[in-house]
Amino acid sequence: MKKIVLITGSTDGIGLETAKLMLSLGHKVLLHGRNEAKLAQVKQQLSPLAEIENYIADLSDLAQVNIFAEKVSQDHPQLDILINNAGVYNVSEIVSSDGLDVRFAVNVLAPYLLTNKLIKNLGITGRVINLSSAALAQIRPSELTQPSALSDSRVYAKSKLALTMWSRHLALKLGQNGPAIIAVNPASMLASKMVKEAYGIIGGDLTIGAKVLVKAALSAEFSAASGLYFDNDIGEFTSPHVDVADENKIADLVRVIENTNARALSSKESNETKNM
Image (cartoon, rainbow, N blue to C red; front, top):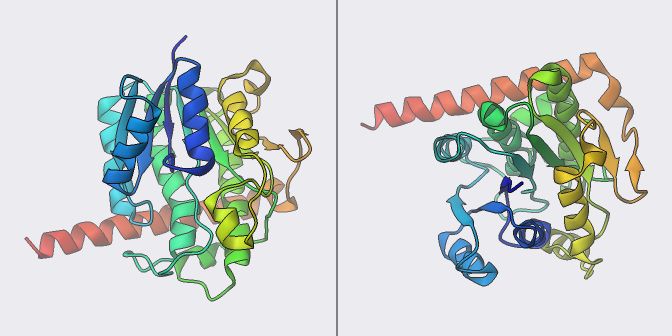
């Protein structure tokens, strides 16, 4: 059966390779990127005849994420798969338009907001695949509320643990009443732009990561995996970090994520009203 698949950050890297695989299997792909010209170029590259739709949004701007989610929701009342692939490691400007850390905004806050806005569209048969990592570091919820002076590698690892923690929270909260929420480490040191910029190496074959994302999104093996973490470095489900099983820490983190998202959106709406 043909699926409708939304892949964030799908103009290069693992996201683009995943889009290619999904299209080759006959599914419809919703591409996402920040640059209209690049999106158009990728769509043309993949195939002008393929079932592709383009969506533009800067995920560091939570108001844009909100609009993006609303547009997808209107266009596709039934959405089968959401792959939260977009992520950043090092950025030229750390502070977002919301006064937040761009890295935490893109890697944690944006996918949480997008996922929750599209829950009803995904329904009980849908799947949300969140790109986690083998690099995970303990995070205090308050760190999400302001720009960080820590190194890119430290912030990235903290952001990926936060993403994995809220993945489990949302899965348990939804139970059988919503889509499966699955965190996946696609494999370490693949040949993405992020790896090249961060480590100065070419990295491994991107299709390794793309194949496991497609498997997580479509296969029966992952049908009962909601709330779990799959580590493609070892090829199995595993417990990635002690905090992923700590209900109190997860609850505190999710509360901060929700409050931070709400404040950012409220502030933008207030500023827009003042400027009218």
